[in-house]
Every structure is written in structure tokens, then in C-alpha cells.
Image 1: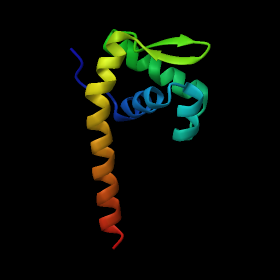
Image 2 (image 1 turned 180 degrees about the vertical axis):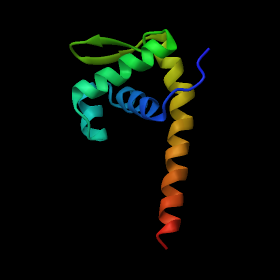
Image 3 (image 1 turned 90 degrees about the vertical axis):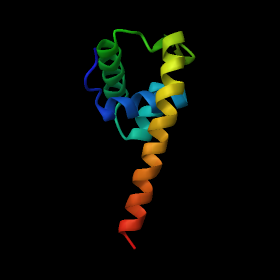
Image 4 (image 1 turned 135 degrees about the horizontal axis):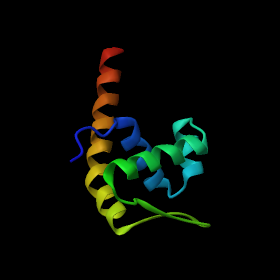
Length: 92
């Protein structure tokens, strides 16, 4: 049973899934490609499931990865929007 999945790992996974590329995710997150790769590997290890197939054309979600993206991605994007809204409100 997974008790805690680090939000940084979730953010990296969702960003990589959205962009289908570790390099593009790294650029968006201001990380190195190696850091993104390691975070995705950590996430896969914690879940006990592969999330992506690595291909020359980029990242392709596994069946599990596609379902995980759909369920987790929407919620994570909502959370990010809520945090951004709170940040904007605090600057007024």
C-alpha cells in the first residue's frame, strides 16, 4: 500500500505525461532531464508499475500510466489552479 506519494513526483509525472517528453518536462519544471528521469523511476518503483514506455519518439503511457494520468492529472491540475488562485489573492 502506498502511504505517501510526493507531490513533486506527481507534478513531474503529470508534466511528462502532458508533454510526452522528459526533455520538455525538464524544461517546463526547470530541472535536468536526468532529474525528471530519476523522479519518474522513483514514482514507478513506489507504484510497482511502469508508467511509460520510453521510445525514440518520446514517452508513451502504458495502459496503467494512461489511467493513472487521467485520474491523477485532472486532480493535480485543479490543485495547481487552486494554489495559483490563492497566490494571486494574497498579493492583492
